[in-house]
Image (cartoon, rainbow, N blue to C red; front, side, top):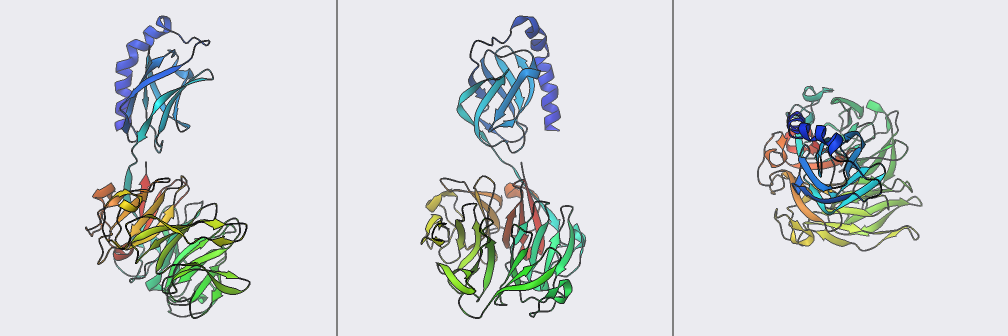
Length: 430
């Protein structure tokens, strides 16, 4: 509705100007294009942006306006003014006007305001087990703070800890079971022949194999694309105590997992489970393209980064990037000035921004927070920390009940394992 309104208004405002412009002004190819100002200075998708400058053209087909290389919709030109509509996921940056291959760039940046719309992708909201479409399916997370992951086709893979199964949610919300038969046990095999002991984390490698960490099973399992389950790593002790998440370095194929009570991050090296990061109570891991690992730290109430040295295949001792050490709270702010309350899930988007989902329950963490790449400014984008519920809506109008796992797809949309509600939620970003 808003975008249609913009087009109508622009037609009324610029209609006379465009007719005049055919004989009243023209672009001089030998002169520079200038962008002197624009207003408003910030706004979300659909914002009407008025650009002022010089050496524009009345032929709107030749005018291109971008921010971060993302094209905006040109709806009118009148002399030294251009009206555009801001498109979805534009991001913040200078305004660039291009005409016949020449460009003019604003000195200041437009600040794009993202919107976060929360909806239910799958689950009835009642603990149970049922495959089906959307709310016709049921999950039983049963207090297992599960993680999830998403592939390029927008299929979401969910560790359903209470049901002792691994589930897949297609892009349309159809839920199916890919492995596990509901028995709390340990057995490799194809599909329903396999058994799990509280599956917790999921991650895909570059070949489409799915790795699953077991909270209480002392194993890292691997599921091939055709549903055959095998054991990737196994033991009983540090490295295999309570396996809360798993990640894969897509370049090297290395698999890393967090052992909550094993006080660190582990990997299989030369057939031996080896501690690669030493830190107490790591919850969930994320890994970037350079192999650096980010972790939520339950006891520290912080988010840490561990830098990877690819030449020597080692990590440094890490540094806290957000959250005040051992101070619980839900204060937004820059880096260490922010506070968390038992942060749990963590994921990276395509721009290097981190997103953290709290665990809720006895902690005020029923929300999703954003850590901006670079200065790690923490902002609450969905839900309210000390409010529990099951509501869709925009941003802080939405409600969660103990959100744990979080995954981000190729479009930078998010998926949340809403443990207390037995739902998988989707956050559409615009």
